[in-house]
Amino acid sequence: MVERSLKQRHVFPRMVRFADIDSLGHVNNVRFLDYLEDSRTGLLHIDPQREGGRPFQGLVVARHEIDYRRPLTFRPDPVRVETWVSEIRPVRFTLEYEVRDDEDVFVRARSVLVSYDVERQAPRRLTGEEIAYLERYHVT
Image (cartoon, rainbow, N blue to C red; front, side, top):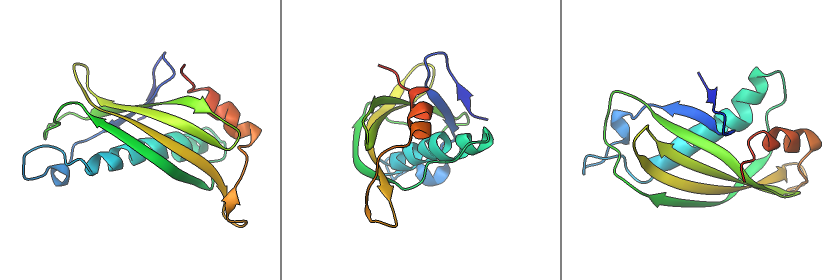
């Protein structure tokens, strides 16, 4: 179940899978991109559909930045991938993330997403509906 906090962060619980663990005994750095993608998919595709709206279409990731703060090891309880919007522009927006539990932040990350018209093979402007949805998670 997806929760929303009072700080307008989208909260996605993510289990640490055995397949995520590398030979050093912690979540491999590349696997964290899966954690971000799972949260982003929940925020931009699954949740809008559950609410009776349209999922975002034609988004492309233009940039990822990740800061690895602490090793994350195999554990029985999920971590939270908290996601929020830090910037909204006419054609793109920026998502910020923390992969965390109650005590530790394991990863801080940022993604820039560009709205894209697949048929024209060109960037497109965000719709008013998309901007209104993103504003719900816009934390400054």
